[in-house]
Amino acid sequence: MREYKATIREHVKYQFDNLPDKIILEVVEPKSSTRSLMEKIQKRGDSYVVTDSSGKKVLGKHKTKSAALKQIAAVEASKAARMDEGLRDIGRGLAKGASTAALAAGIGLATKPEPPSIPNTDEVRQGEVRQLESGPTQKITYSKETGINTAKKVVDKNKEPQATLDDHVNHLREYEGFRSKVYDDHKGNPTVGFGHMFKSDSKETWEGAGIGHLHDRVKAGKAKLSEADATRLLHHELENTYLPRVRKLLPRYDDLDKDSQIAALGSTFRGGFAGSPKTVGHLNNGDFETGADEFLKNAEYIKSKREGTGVHKRMDLYHNSWKKGRYVR
Image 1 (cartoon, rainbow, N blue to C red):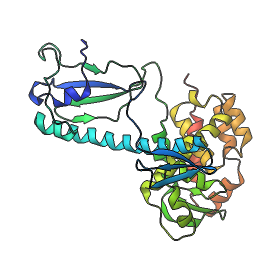
Image 2: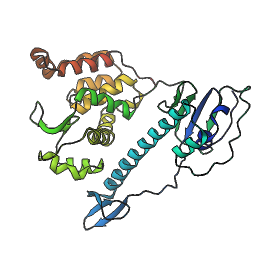
Image 3: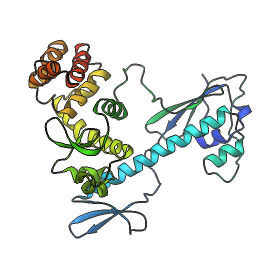
Image 4: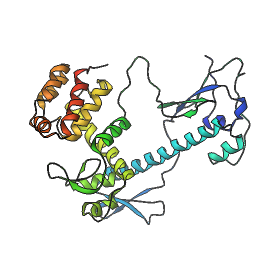
């Protein structure tokens, strides 16, 4: 396969009819970015306050500068997600044979530069386009039949795919279910969203997720939590609380197969994994079958099966994942 180089923007502006039937674009994020953040951090008394670019609208208050930076990171991640949606819109335009001018307008470009240098499409039907700076990569597949698909990460063929943060979020969204108003869970803990329990440090967690201004009203039952904000809160909690926790329990967590990773983090989120030290010990020793069986020797599991609640079904899912579990690296 021959390789040619050009930027993503150059390619999406190039005439549709001159593109090869299929292109695989490898988008490389630069090691550093010159893009400035629109949010600001101000020191007010003992607090670090996150504001908008004007400095007037308060987005969150934090005890530490590190927590304030995490909130800004969460906001920036949300912006990046919207940018991904923009790329998918461009792909739909390509699939319909949209003109170069329409594509340029779609990404906010006012001028039309010269088309990039692309090899003769009779010689090369498939190629890789990469930016010149090195960094984390994402593969974008384009074809005239299907348009652009930005969802596929570049995977080393010598390694099995690992669970991403989005995999964990999607799993817990499905099994926790969404509740917009605060309620008491089966243990009497005030809960909202996708299984988020209110604790002494909850407000700081909400601020880190960029929704600190909603905490008190939602907790008091005076406001509802939207599904989008609940997802943002779940994402933040998993990344900053539960992933570090499961990695402490399982030092080789990142070497596990994907299903075992999802089971370990899912059970850690529920609280059952840490409550089964024998299961943790067997998994750390690579004895997955024994660890899986040990996991079901649990009073909550037995009670759920007797009463017909859903807890045992989720525990069975994790048991089955570990039964086939392995370290893949």
